[in-house]
Length: 107
Image (tube, rainbow, N blue to C red; front, side, top):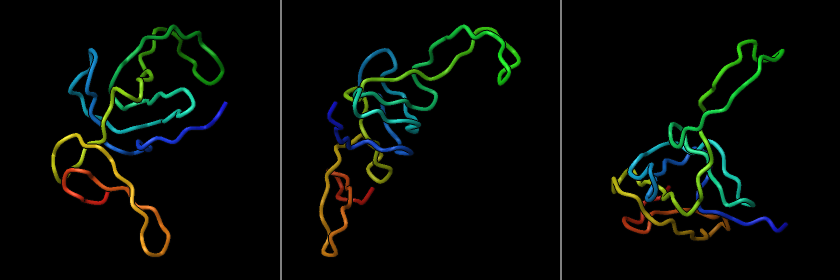
């Protein structure tokens, strides 16, 4: 399977733009570009039934964040205070820089 690139990275603040979690903001915990999925902190909780194990002594029903489709989130620009598209530019020294398409602020 070919690895794809995404404009969303770990620790970015994102906003959910569609679905039942629409409008919620959170920090990205994990990105899976091959599956086109992203896990956002405190968004899209799912319940899993867990048996007691050596690591986790207590079993029961555990709530944790589930993956969302990458197309349902947009990067949140703190300066604009709005969700925005992400642009990329190559600096003079060859380094790549991500920026907000609304206000041109570096992310």
